[in-house]
Image 1 (cartoon, each protein chain N blue to C red):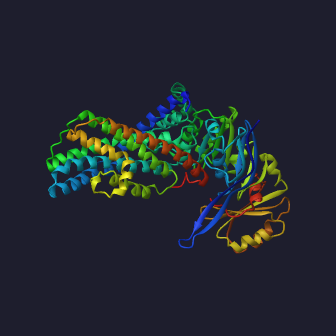
Image 2 (cartoon, rainbow over the protein chains, first blue to last red):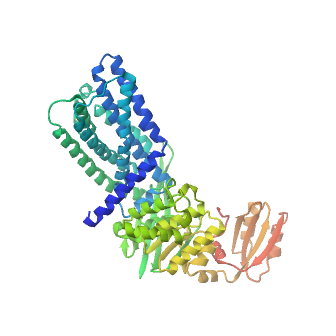
Image 3 (cartoon, rainbow over the protein chains, first blue to last red):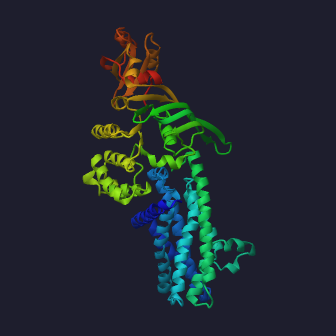
Amino acid sequence: MKLADIRPTFRILGNSIWLQLKDNVVSSQIVGTLILQPVIFTLISVGTYEYGHRPDLSLFAIIGVGLISIWNTNLFISGDILREERRRGTLSLVMASPTPLLVVLLGKSLANAITSIIAMGLTFMTGMLAFQIPIRIANPLAFLIGLVLMIISITCLGLVFGTLFILTRSAGELMSVANYPVFILSGLSIPLTLLPLWTHPFSQLLSPTWGNLVLNAAVSGTEGSMLPNYLVILGLSVLYLIIAHFLYQHVEYRALQTGTLEQW
Amino acid sequence: MITIFTQNLRRTYQTTTGVIRRRHKEIVALDGVDLSIQSGELFGLLGPNGAGKTTITRILATVLLPTSGMAQVFGLDVVKKVKEIRPRIGLVFGGERGLYMRLSGRDNLQYFADLYKIPPEIAKRRIPELFELVGLADRANERVENYSRGMKQRLHIARGLLHDPELLFLDEPTIGLDPLAARNLREVIRNLHQAGKTIFLTSHYMFEIDALCGRVAIMDKGHILVEDTPSALKKLVADLEVVEIECFGIPEELITKLRMHPGVQAVNVEPLEQSQLLQIQAPAGAEMVKEFLAILEGVPVHKVVTRQPTLEDAYIKLVGGGTKEE
């Protein structure tokens, strides 16, 4: 990218975030993924541990559900963005512009991740109100850094999937397929130690695994430096961006070849 | 200087039928299209639905790849030089799609101005100018979902002009507009041409192409049938006259009989609200009205008119005549 392109790219990134935030405010889907789902997931997940006499895992469940909600919101709304762009007939017009669609998608995904902070807040509130779980964050700064890194990282991971959605109008089905493996392998719904050994390498490649560790450690106040985990999250985010970039080159060519940009 | 050049341009699509025994079928959308359009021209591409007009527009606008052949815009290959071509062209499709309905007209233009990397100080000046140009200045801050179809179409044009492109692709821009809105839009197109823009206009409205374009190509089933000035194309039917017969419930076999009648060049059936309009091309001065009415015996006839041929009749003769899809 040339130096002269950096300012306009940041401008379109900012504008895409703003546009998507505006759209999210009036979207009905946001109610489901951002409000209902976190509340229901928290009730089921925390309830399972509470009634199973393992209240020590309740906080783990709350953080897990919070991260699941961030991932869900990002994945579902990102898929929906492309479906909407197709339906509106704007996908090919955006693609015909000199700005790479990937930059637009990055901005919109970032907006969704920012919006999804609400879901994290809701899971904590549900835990407090429904199960009287006292939420005390032992290391708030570490938690905040971890949360910001997770939002960036989940945006980058969502971008890998979002890029694939350009190829198909069946983004909805693909979203469901992509949803569960990520949060199960990341140990967000059940502890990683309960997963078979062969799944562990896959878990290590998913940044929510590390984000979960960081947030749990920040809440419980575990001793030791968080820096290595932060660096892993950052490294994986860069890796996702590189994958998304190369995938996009291929996907754009394929979409122009098959002529599927206008199909919805 | 040549702005658009295509040689033996071909585009096919693959479709499949069946669930268990899947059969693959190749659909030819463009079949060996050769075009050469000069800078500053207002070039019209005419053809019925499915002729390949949108396919060629999309290929030239770099949003679809050709299957084979060559296509160049500003001397640049549309497959390899996409990044160089995109900032220099504007793309406008007909219809209501292609806009962000929940945003205001101004927000739409601002967003696309950013996508085209227009510096904010230029966009700030240009956006109000474009709203003036397309007559939407007093509605710029309203949500697009409240716009009429004609207003949306004018906003499309403004969007296409944001980055001041040298070449503008207009794919059926007046489709679905009421006559007044279509006339206003044609006026905008005429002004753009006078301002020096090269315009590639597709339409299936003959009078529109006749009124606007310096040169026209007629295409059907992926082929260019003929390419010339509107007046030269009208000469193709200069030795003919058109008999228009408005009638009610004409059977298909009588239309076939009319087509087979000696001297008849083409028969077009235009469905009207409650009747049908037969447009029969016959040699000028042959006075065949009585013969046609004899064939139509028993069919209620409302009106018979003989008139001079137009560009539309040249088009009907070239694409063979038949029942229009619209």
